[in-house]
Image (cartoon, rainbow over all chains, first blue to last red; front, side, top):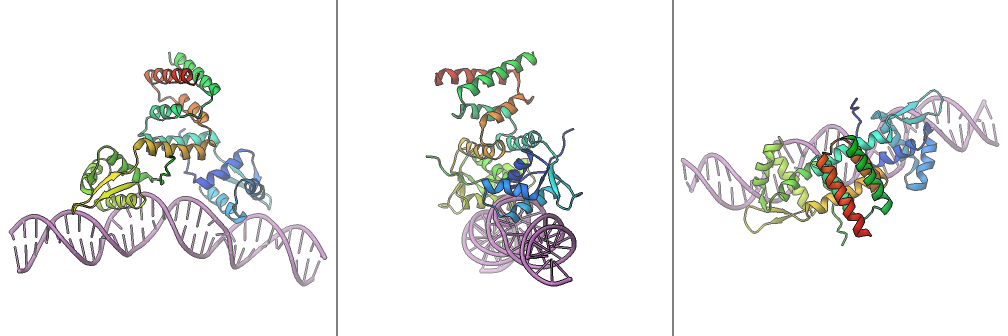
Length: 128
Length: 128
DNA sequence: AGTATTAGATTACACTCGTAGTCAATATTT
DNA sequence: AAATATTGACTACGAGTGTAATCTAATACT
């Protein structure tokens, strides 16, 4: 395992989000989707798609004249990869310090906290 | 508040770490520090320092002929800023999904888990 | 069939980043 | 004082990114 996932830039990530939300999609479908949330020109989005293909993060189906694109990695895989390198960069590799900082942040609802507590409790039991 | 902290690149972050660990420092002191952990040439480190100054993330004392450098933001401030934008980018802004993913990762010790549970419990009480 | 439209391929260009090197002024050593 | 070393200022250069435009071949419309 431990698939080597190429790094995905900020704009490219937006494109990936669209593909994770449903694929395969034609370039036009991706463009439509993003037109709502960004003000990128169609050509820009096309470039991003091409770069993702070149990086081997997105696959292309060239059977039809109009290509369709699809992700080669799941969102979860990519999130983990990004988060891994982020934590190493910013928190010296220790997951806990990040968790502590974010739990203390205010953005969690009562419900979120309960869920986290449950997860922790379960984890503790399983690790016995 | 809500200070607008400029973005700090990966290599620059290494330099910041040295300064957070103790400042002010001369360029040479920073270079010494990093020579142990990286194989960057002194000029490279100097460039990074200059860029950080230019970005207004590091201050310079030019009173002496040999300048000394010091951070303009605390490590905690910078971590929060980076983490904020990271979460927005990768997790669509929801802190919880990141926490869940990382709690499930294996890198937490029994002790860490206890600490997190305590923090959550306290937080819940305080939020009443 | 000729022309307009569209999809894909190729090219562009400024800015950041990693990774230094050169040049000029000052300090130190002989 | 002359030679050398050090510090700071400025310059360099290729890869990656944000943000597109142009060129070309094929399809669709009149």
